[in-house]
Length: 85
Image (cartoon, rainbow, N blue to C red; front, top):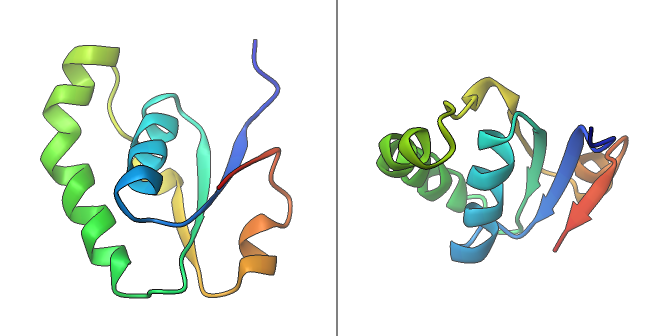
């Protein structure tokens, strides 16, 4: 069993969003940070767009409640077990 429960994602563009979706599909708590605050809408749109495929691929639902956006890099990375940049 993985000891990683909370993941910090720095950058929420195409690649970062992919990591967010994958971690949410594996029941991780995700702390997301990006300097561009407008990317939050992009992330949410991509989660919605890919949710059916993720359910088929991993046989799991994306737990959107496990996603938290932060305005501060320091706060986003506090109390995480792993950082993906």
